[in-house]
Length: 321
Image 1 (cartoon, rainbow, N blue to C red):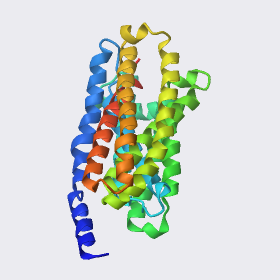
Image 2 (image 1 turned 45 degrees about the vertical axis):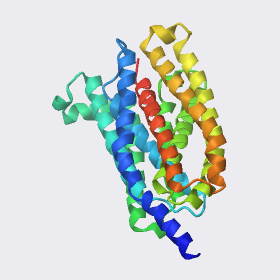
Image 3 (image 1 turned 90 degrees about the horizontal axis):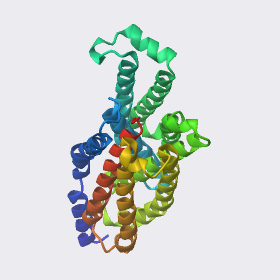
């Protein structure tokens, strides 16, 4: 490597050094919550459960864990980002516990501040939602502890184990959700959730870890090949789930659930159009080393932020009657 190439590499690393983490903290969470607020407004008089914003944050954190754990599968040269995995999984576990408390409060008809240990225990042991919540809390907590161990001992752990545990945990909620009452509904719901989490999480993880033009040239085309079937899966399963749940086109405008589904569909169409445009204008240019790392990062950030809004709407949709 000559001196000018080394300077370019250091410059590329400097321009994208700490900004992705600040962007994650300052933009992804607020925009996901903006999606929740939009969904809450569109639901109007239809009941939206109190845990909706917590559900949105839990879904986002789980997707980040899934995406970060999948990075070594995208390229053997990528090391698992154990710090990111530990933080995201920790947030995920905290959100799952908060959801348990809020759900117990709603089922028991008691304010959270007045919920006693006995009443909380009754919810956990006698209500199916509580039992599922315990499984989700155990799964996310196990991933957080294993990731923390991996952060200290990276040579003694594997990201594949995190990937498997995360995928199983993320699939638990849709498997037992409202679609489980329909034929193949559990399978469709689980596939939809996993595909959406991978589509969102892997791109977000790339934005947090990729630093140079050469890395984007190699990794972006590979992600693009993953993103195409993931986006198709999200679209097809979402259409089937939505039509089964709504029951008719008129309900898209007359019910809160229908309006949320319509809003999610509109944003998803925008994402698909953006993905098509990126495959024509971003992916080939980056693959030819004709785009600097900062420009690729900006495009990745823009797409992830739009995905965060979709996650906000989708998380609220899942807990809307």
